[in-house]
Length: 120
Length: 107
Image 1 (cartoon, rainbow over the protein chains, first blue to last red):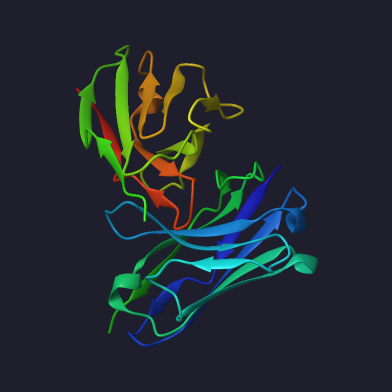
Image 2: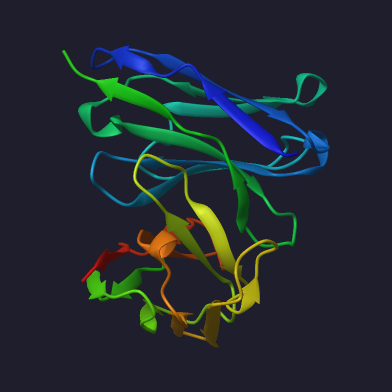
């Protein structure tokens, strides 16, 4: 059974940092691209970042570019999102999701989400 | 960036009703479109990919159609567990973008 289990969310002050983790199981993690999507309270879905299976291709939304860093450890079946210089508008539930490997980014499995609150 | 516009933003319907949700892309995206269902407090769930392909395990009352800029999600006979918010997402190019969502409520 495919599982994505997220951790690392919490309350942080503006300008602070947080590192999210996503532990994958039930599939060959190293062969799938992975994606982060976030959802602000009461709002819709916003794509945040993409990483290819080997980690050689990384893409960010303009809203987080230069502040967030996505990475992966294929040996440990884990995905990470390092979030620096956090702003109020980064407050959201963050989801990791698996790209279905069809060649297009359809997200076939999602983690349970981890909430991030940026507030003083 | 490709903008995705969903309509309506909400719909009230009864069990057994046929419900149709539309999604329009600001430019052509071929059939690179997905539909997701999200229930309160839960992660989204993939229903349809490539505009019309039913994800494994999703009931056949869900169907998708369209290509280019105009797409439709249809629920042929609404069931109690279908009351949720539905999102479209384009997978034609980065940045990936989602529609604003359509909330399906009980009439």
